[in-house]
Length: 390
Ligand code: APR
Ligand code: PHB
Image 1 (tube, rainbow, N blue to C red):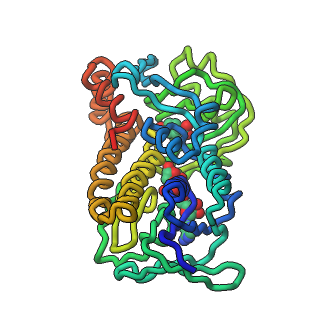
Image 2: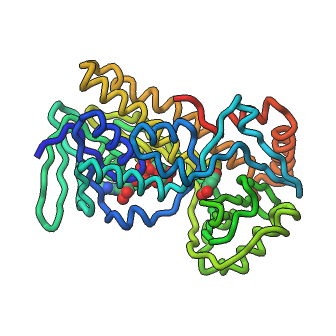
Image 3: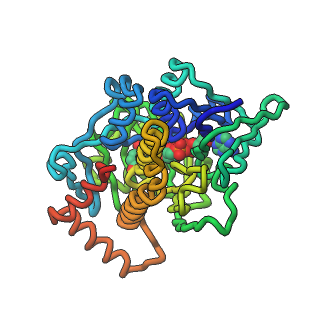
């Protein structure tokens, strides 16, 4: 079999790239290790930058998001028992974000792909990219005991942090940058109306808390927890007690509680692989970089990579120029590192780091006070939060 582009992974990066390629008449196949149901069972952040929203629309998969997504013009930063609104719209000259769950977005992209009749192989085992250093790369995989081979022009490694694409690159050709954080996020989903119309990011001496949402009737809440905590350590009552203790009193008092139907703990990590291109293999999304969830940049960064990669591939096929794909890695990394910086900074500013002691705590207090009382500092936060331009 032959395809112009083989995409490994059907997360948001792979699906969005695939849809844009299909619409441009560039044939592609997606090879996904898991089942469709498994891909759709993963719960992740849900704040979309305007650039991400525009790309979904460009891909023809934005209709439900426009209908059901919640546009947000600001969010709150809470500390020291008070909350302060960051007016995204006012501070950025009219930009906003869209709250729409990543699971829904993935669903919409899968539906669009099915409607277009483009091939996705789910439960593809032992996917392996080959010969991407030369001019005739190919990808092999196993399905129901049979080994298949797809010859192609390019391979897009959109297979996330644990994928095979990055690991197929010889060690000497790749540089890895990493920072881990000494805590995790415990998140729950619960069918009660969100405590506020907008998100609340809260710094507290007991640890960070975040009030987010999936809809006007479904809340997504998080608390900073220990890395070795297990969900069994956190029955709902403990979760509600803890988040209420961390939030400003007025918020805690009006918070509606209920039985959670999803509960998970995620570690926090910053990670970048350089470069993002190896001959005819491109890395995009979590395969190349991870950000801690504070600021919700993961999905948006993946879409930024897809922007550059799709534009480059289109230029290659229709404009007969390799300039776009040659510039891909440098352009993507320049944007990636800015989002890495921002996510690291938001994480550092809002979480409890016991090891930094009283000095660290005072610095954090000064940072937060400056952030909400200086227009310049609030603008920098807002500009990064709504997303730097592509
Ligand atoms: N072979 C085929 N598919 C694979 C392999 C493999 N060896 N390894 C992983 N995959 C699949 C995973 O099952 C997953 O469906 O690749 C997909 C990667 O998807 P994501 O992890 O969602 O990564 P990405 O598309 O880059 O998404 C970026 O969305 O999922 C979030 O946290 C992520 O916010 C980030 C953003
Ligand atoms: C979420 O809704 O899951 C969410 C929102 C904002 C973040 C992180 C996660 O910064």
